[in-house]
Length: 151
Image 1 (cartoon, rainbow, N blue to C red):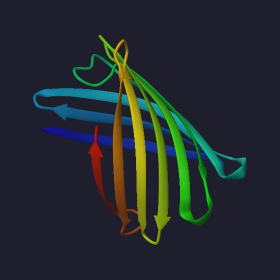
Image 2 (tube, rainbow, N blue to C red):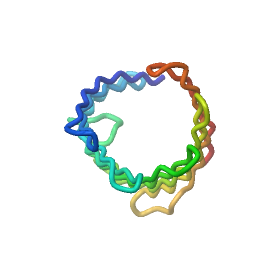
Image 3 (spheres, rainbow, N blue to C red):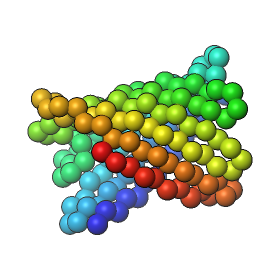
Image 4 (cartoon, rainbow, N blue to C red):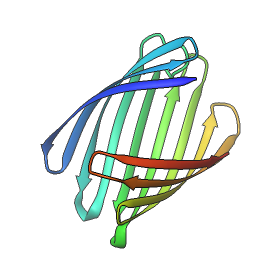
């Protein structure tokens, strides 16, 4: 039982930068958490892109109290792309750090992607997860996707 709603406002300052703020409300069984996030995405020279985001939650029940994400990636020829991400989530009693490497391919109205995630709970060993994603972009505003994950 998990339900999530979010509202996001984004704006472009110029053709190379995007800024956003997001409010998310998550329900899990009989608990509810609200998170606020701010971030930015930049288009860099040479088909590179990067982004940063910060998240906070006031008195969370199951979501992290704070979070930070940074990533850098590159668009390649023939619809290929790479993205490398660092994410850290801080809970009241634990910190989790995750590194992600993603490769994706766009073809027609579809996207296929594989990502390898290495997560480490502070003081514990690193665990790996694999995700395979397939998306179908029906229109500019509608898409369907499926994710297969292990780990």
